[in-house]
Amino acid sequence: MKNKIGILLAIAMLAVLVIPASASQSKLVPITSIISVVQDQSITIRTDYFPANDTFNVLMGLSGTQGIGGILVSKLTTGAGGSILAKFHIPPELQGQQIISIRLESLTVGYPAIYDYFYNNTAVVVPNYSTTPYTVTVVPTWKGPQEGFPGIDILSVVKGGSVTVRLINMPANRNYTVQMSDSRDAFHNKGWLDVSVMGTASGGIFNATFTIPAALQFRPMISIKMINQTTHIWITQSFYNE
Image (cartoon, rainbow, N blue to C red; front, side):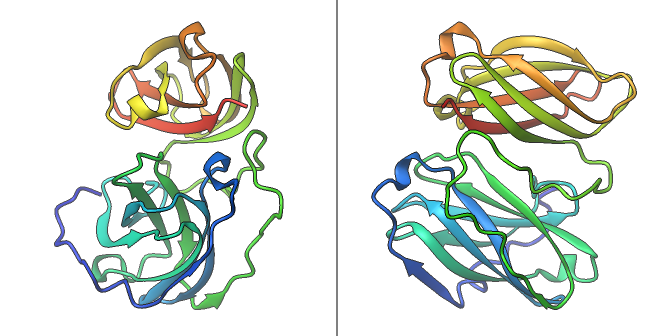
C-alpha cells in the first residue's frame, strides 16, 4: 500500500509499559509478539530485546506486505528498551481486513525493520515466547501464503560463511539479483554487494543458501536483499553473523 492515506499520529500511545532491558540486550535480535486484538479497533503487542533510547515508526498495511509502504499509525519510543507492551489503533482504512501487517522501523539507532501480522479478530493471544533469545537459527513464524507477497525468513547462519533462507510466495520463472550489505549501511541503502543471480523455477516456497562475501565475513550484522529483475521490486531481511 502506498503512503497516500493521512497519517494517524499520537492515537496509538494509549498504553505503554516499559520493562527494564537486560544487560546483554545489545546482542539480541529485536522481536515482537501479538498479545491481543480488538477487531477493527486495536492491537496490543509485546516487544523483546529492543534497543534503548530509540524511536520506531509503527506502520500497518495489507496482509503479506510486511507493512512496507503502510499507514503510519504511531511512533514508539523505547526508553530503557527490552520488553515493552504497546497498544495501537487499527486505522479506518484497514478495518474489515481479515489479516493486517504491522511494521516497526527504527528512526535513530538504525536496526532493521521488524514486522509481523495478525488476524483482525477479537482475541487474546498466548505468545510463543522462548526464554532463549534467537540470534542464529530461527524457527520462522510464517504460517502460510498471504496474498502472494514474497518474503524471506532466516533459517540458519554459518558465521562468515553462508546464510540459509526460506523464500515464500515467490513468483515463477523470475530471476532475482541477490545482494548483501553491512546492516548499518543497508539502513541508508548503500554498500550492497552482488552475491549471485537466482532463478525461481516454479516459484512458491523453497530454501536457498547464499555465500557471505569476503568483505562482510567479519561484520556483526548483515542484510540480504533480493531484487526481481523484471519488476525491480525487492525484498530484504537481516541476520546476525554468529
